[in-house]
Length: 219
Image 1: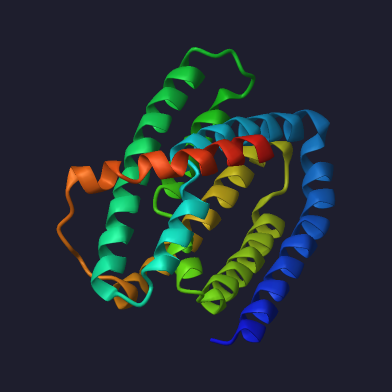
Image 2: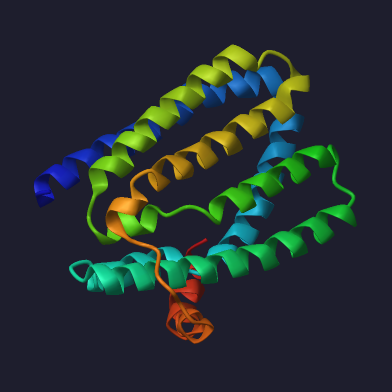
C-alpha cells in the first residue's frame, strides 16, 4: 500500500478519534455526574499505568522489529511470537499486582476497578504493532473506525442512569477487546506458528527498556 493511502487511512481514523469524545463526553457527563465520572477516570488512569508496564514499551519496539524483518516470513513469524510471549508474561505479572492492589485498596465503587482488570487482560492480545510493522494501516483504520462507531451506538442505547457506570466501563473495555480480536483474523496471513525458545523471548527485554522508559516519561 502506498504511503499516501496509509496517510489518508490514518488521518481519517485520527479524525474519528477526535469526533467520538466530542459526541459522547457531554452525554455521559450529564448522565453520570461529576462524582461517577471521577471514579471512572481514576480507575482508567490506574489501569493505564499497569497496561504501560504490561506492554513494557513493546508497542514501539515491536512494530520496529517487525519492520526490520517484514520481508522474511520465517524471521517475522519468530519475532512476532517471541514478542507476544514476552508481552503475555509482563501482562500476567501486571494483572496479578493490579488485582492485589485493588483488593486491598479503599476506592469507592470498587467494582469498576475490578472491571478494568479485563482491559489489562485484553491488551495482552493487542497485535496492532504487527500491522504497523508491515505498514498495513488500512486494516487498523477500518477496524478502529467501525469499532468506535459501534461504541458510540452502544453508549447512547444502553447508558441511561448513574447506575449504568459499570455498563459504560464494560462497553469501553469490550469494544477495545473486540477491536484487538478482529485483527487476529488476519494474523495467519502474516505469520505462521513456529517454535521459539525462552532465550529468544528474553532477548527482547534489554532493547525494549529504553522505549519503556520513554513511554513512562511521555505518559
